[in-house]
Amino acid sequence: MSETAETIISEELRRCVGRTSPVRALETLSASDLRRYVDATGDANPLWLDDDFARSTGYKGRLLPPILVGWTPFSIKEPEGEASSFDVRRQLPVPAGYTNVRNAGSETEWLRPVHLGEALTCQSRIVDITAREGKMGVGIYVAQLEEVRNGEGELVFTRRHTVALFPERKVEEKGSGRPG
Image 1 (cartoon, rainbow, N blue to C red):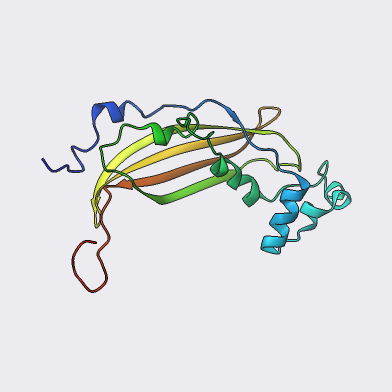
Image 2 (tube, rainbow, N blue to C red):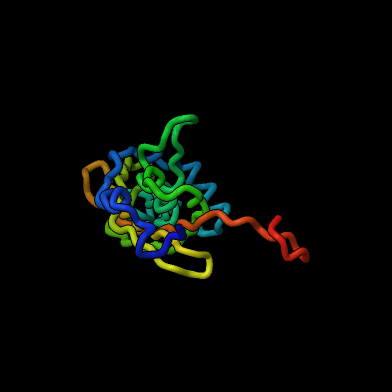
């Protein structure tokens, strides 16, 4: 039986909406991480590089660039051989063969600045699972909400990130018109 957008999402998969990861400490970003960011991007904002300048504008010290902070939850790596306890999306009971994962967009809301060396935590929750037909077949769209908090428990930013999962397809060989 061929799956359709109406049948692909099982009751078991529907029950995953609301599933939440444990709170996880993020790697603390250091001055050397910040220097590598500045070297790679050329973004030499004095808020990132000069404590006195940052204090003169009302902060307690240097800030981290939001894009650098925003990347940190994406860079979490589970220990080798362990099932992912943090990325709840990877734990979903999707149909066999749904291994072609695509970024389907994200929206980030920044609420507080993050200072160099500040400890952060992240928690993720599945907020929606839908399906729809497209050029690549029936796709399963999983929306996950990430919340990053500082050491005082204040919300630093939220990100709603959606991934689309499609059935794996063989790539056609160039010129042959046949699957490779």
